[in-house]
Image 1 (cartoon, helix red, strand yellow):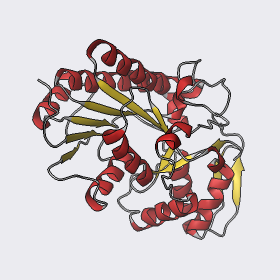
Image 2 (cartoon, rainbow, N blue to C red; image 1 turned 30 degrees about the vertical axis):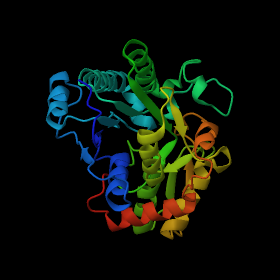
Image 3 (cartoon, rainbow, N blue to C red; image 1 turned 90 degrees about the vertical axis):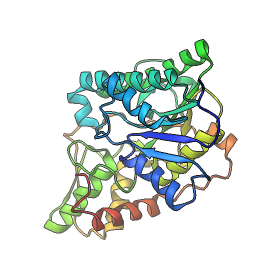
Image 4 (spheres, one colour; image 1 turned 180 degrees about the horizontal axis):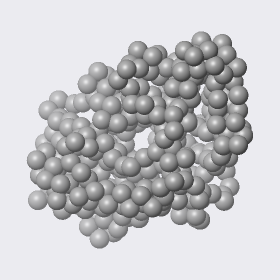
Amino acid sequence: MESGAGPMRVLVTGGTGLVGRAIERVVSEEGGAREGERWTFLSSRDADLTDAAETRAVFEKHRPTHVIHLAAMVGGLFRNMRQNLDFWRNNVHINDNVLQTAHEMGVVKVVSCLSTCIFPDKTTYPIDESMIHNGPPHQSNFGYSYAKRMIDVQNRGYFQQYGRRFTAVIPTNVFGPHDNFNIADGHVLPGLIHKAYTAQKQGSPLQVWGSGTPRRQFIYSLDLARLFLWVLREYDEIDPIILSVGEEDEVSIKEAAECVVDALGFKGQIVFDSSKADGQFKKTASNGKLRRYLPEFPFTPFSQAVKETCDWFVANYDTARK
């Protein structure tokens, strides 16, 4: 039986992570929820989504009509390079269990979260939604990348065979409050924030891994959360959609580090360690499709978003993931 009648019952997997916390804040503090809706934010303590039986049990408990699927094994460049097989296997199990259970239980819509790292390493820029499967991803994180690509394949299969409206979004580099600020295994911006904070306390130079030349588009987690709600309610395509700031807002890692330094008031030296891997030089993504739908969507300025994230980290240092 389809479960689409009445108010939405939304289940958010990975609901206590960076994006899940941002969605929860938008729903609870910015009026994102509508009357009668029920929102449930799952953590890894609620169910092991690599286990089909546990996935089924948590779906039966909450009986969602809609799912935002954020749960994944994630990590920064260096952890991916060490554990490509683990990233592949764990994420394939999670994704298949969530999507198949959603299908079996008549969930109306699933919105899964992909990543720009799924795109081919050898490509033309800017990348867009039509180019996902045009070639191999960067070898540094092929396990994670291929596992995420398979969500798109699976969504198309559910639509072709069963008419399911399962889709996916592709955000660029996400950051914000509740991020993972682990220096070794986290993503670049929260890692920079933690390192700059520590260097400031110790009176030492800020060591930035790599040359500082690679370029990235960063999206503030609260902006992404607002866009997730729009996709859940309004976006009706099976094809994925890139959620990103514009190409003109791409910044180098050096520029990002300088922005962190300004936000924290760090006065020390910045040193770039070129012996560390840079990863992919750039992954410039087009947000043209998003802008055709939402031409006026206001993205938070990068410097403001970095300042808010730094302020959150300083205020929550003792309990922040690090």
